[in-house]
Each structure stands twice: as C-alpha cells, then as structure tokens.
Length: 269
Image (cartoon, rainbow, N blue to C red; front, side):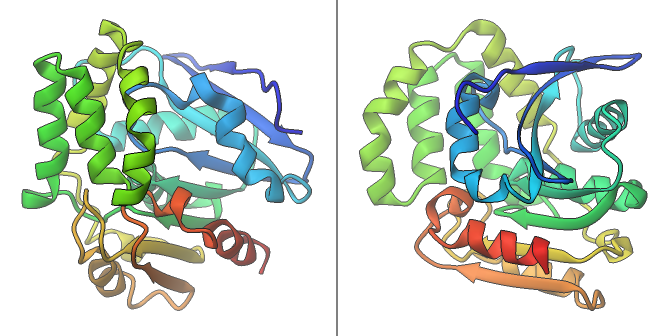
C-alpha cells in the first residue's frame, strides 16, 4: 500500500507542485512536512510507511513546496500556493496535518481558507517565529549560505532529534550531506528565510475547526514554551486539544511512539 509510491505534479496557472498520495479511504488527509534540506519527495515510500494506519480511512496526500520558488517566499505565500494545489486536485474539505514549518502553513491555511479544512493537526510548530524563536533557523541559514552542508546536516539533526536518536543518525546525515545539490541548498535558504517574522498569534482565534496540537517541552528548535503559547492563543476555541511531550525533541511527530495514534483518534472522533 505504501511501497513504490509515484511522485506526481499538480499544475496551476502560476506554478507546479510535487506531491504523492497513498491509501484507499474516502476522506482526504493532507500532510505538510516541515522544512528540510532535501525534499521529502525523494523518500516518498519511507515517509508514507509510518502512516499505514491511516490508509483504510483516508487517502493521504503529502505536498512539497512549489517548484518555481521566487527569491522571497513567506509562509503565507506557501499557504496560498498549497490552497491552490488542493483546489486544483479537487480534494474538497480535508483533514490537515502540518509538522514544524508545515504546521505554520497549516495554521495559515485554516485562517484564510476555513472552507477547506475539516480538522487540523499541528505538531512541533509555533504560532510565532519572531525574535529569538528564529535564532536556530537563522543559524541553519548561515551554514547553508557558507556551503557548509555537513555542518548544516549535523547542526539541524542535533537541534531536531533527541540526543540518542541523533547519535544513531549521524552517519546517515553525513551521507545525505554528500548528495545535496546547489539548487537544493538555494531552495532551502529561500524556504528557511520564509519563516522569519511569521506570526499568527493574533489570528488563530479565527480558526473554527477542531484543532489538535502537540508540542515538546524539550524542543531544540522552537524552545520549551510553545505549548504555553498555543494554550494562550487557542484558549477560546472549545474544540482545541493540546498534548505536551517530554524527551522526544522537535521531531516528536516522528519520535513519539504514540503521536500518530493520538492523531488518528482525533481525526476519527
């Protein structure tokens, strides 16, 4: 069901966007991955495998960012383009999951295009990246601009994963660094810079659909207080649920063994 997945391209009037899909369920579930040095489209089957539990109930769509990147491309622009891609595929009302930067895009989508979203799941993301919250991403950008790809992979890996997981992945990360192209590095810089000054803290109160957010109090990218900020910003939403992890780092969406079960339970409730 999730092996040998084919990456496809959806075309709109202004751009094209890669995506892949799997599953046989009636409901569409869109997944927006986080910022990555190399596109997750390169590892479609590996990305899909942990989501096998969703394939009976959902047809899952994983979207990349647009192919033709402008030099300045904000999270809000990413949300607009993702909405166009969703509409181009005629997916109708969707369940939406965004991780990290994907969560920022997902919140922006739910604010501006409420008619598209049935339920929203966010993990390891933030309603604001202003000030010091951007420091870690800015460090990655500087490494990328200097062309220090191995250091970039090691630095981001150390920030994203718990220490024990990072130690296990070091060799894999260094091997991946050797395959990064100049174009991939250019895209990474543009997408990372698009996070700067992102802030929907005053707008998420307009999200009317049910929301499940998961955060880590040991998040090496966003800091340890993102859960408090989510709780404050969503306090008036009666359909908001928050879960805080400890010990799973920024990549809790991958490292927390119960996250996908929690996500499925929320989406099916």
